[in-house]
Length: 197
Image (cartoon, rainbow, N blue to C red; front, side, top):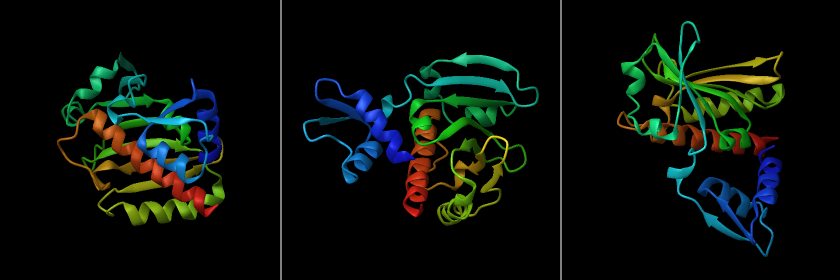
């Protein structure tokens, strides 16, 4: 899936024999020879990955929209969510869509106090063991580290994991850095699952 999605993205994004990609996508595309020979890759800085993301702040209990935020909101420290435990962030980005992630929400867990990412992942039901094996291996198996369940209705894996247990997590991250870390973790996850198919 990732290969097909990235091939499509690259073919639509070539302008004047150049394509702009972030490091993960560039490395993946080069390794799998997805870039036409006459095309130059321009590597983008991660600080611009989510400039066009759609961000909502909502109330956890009622799911009522509090406000739609601009990219600048992501410069806040991650502890914004600990200071506003009644809120969750809903996040959409083409970079998450590219790896098959739908409806990403980010919040502080009321029970464990961890920073949790929740989303739907577009993979067949049969990929469940690979998904669980990866999460078991990569997350530092702390309390409430992850949960996964296949949603028959949507045909998606409902995934919830504690960002606190991901290598590279720090309590002083900004929200933007947290979303970059989530993206990186999920990019590797999807790549790993794809290699097992």
